[in-house]
Every structure is written in structure tokens, then in C-alpha cells.
Image (cartoon, rainbow, N blue to C red; front, side):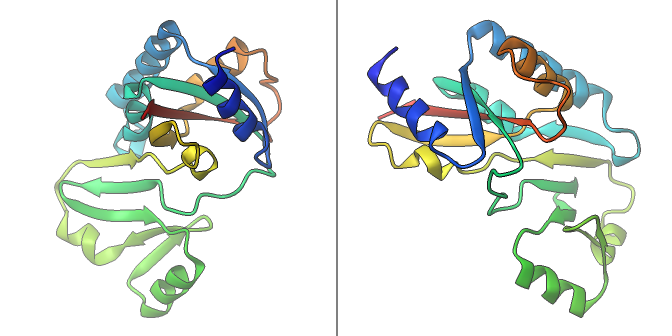
Length: 188
């Protein structure tokens, strides 16, 4: 194993909640891209079109790996999910509890699940435009400190790609507490 790859693996496996690492081949990249494009083309029923920008950003990086994580893995520190109509964000994930409470107090919103906010005024403003669910890539600080990596991005794959990765790397696919994250980066 390359020295740099061993260092990345060590940093990832030292991260609470990450249980394994697998490196993507060009074939893996093509398969994941194909699965994401199928879902983007078919959409997500009432939610409209779906686009996982984060996954496509990961796949554009020179190096990409998948990690298997469990419920001990940290929660995202920035939002990854938005519902967009044209240029208007009509709904978004809010990960800052103070901001979420502030929005709740101001009114004019509906909170779905734990932290997805719908903005009523923005929905009216975007009426007639096709909605798109956009998933963006997120930072991955667990390897950003390594002196040889740059342009680090991570993203969660769609369900079919998650299952593909679990089968590809021999990870349990029947345990709902286990998920996959793709991480991409370039070299300095």
C-alpha cells in the first residue's frame, strides 16, 4: 500500500464511527455515477428532481474512497440538503440548533423531521417552478490536516450506490445502523 494511502486509511480508521475504508476503482466510479444519474433522471416522486452534487464532486477528485460508518460517527456540522425552485431555496436542512430555534420563533416555516425547514413565503415566490432536491458535498476535516491532501469533499450516496459499495467491499448490507460516505481529494 502506498505511504500516503496508509496515512489516509489510518486517519479515517482513527475517526470515531468509521469502521472500514475501501478505495474506488474507475469501474466503481462509473457504476456509482450511473446509479446517481438514474435517480436524477427519474426524480423522487412528489419532491421533484434529485441531484447529488456532492457525489459528482467526489467522483471528480483524483482519489476517492468509501468509508463504512456506524451511529457513533459525528453528525454533519453544515447542511447538505436543500429543496430548490429556480434560484429560490424553499427548504433546507438546518444543523445549527440555535438557528433552528430562531426560525421556529419567527414563524412562517414548517419543520419536517428533526431539522428540515420549509419556508412558506419562498414557496409562494417560487410557485410554478420545478423543484429540485439538491445534496451538496461537505468538508471532511478528519483528513484535511494531512499535508499532502487538498480539495477534500465528502458526500452520501443514494441507496442503490450505498448497497453497491457494501457488496463491493464485503460490508454488511442488512444492518440499518451502517452507512457509507464517499470521500474525494486531490494531492498537493
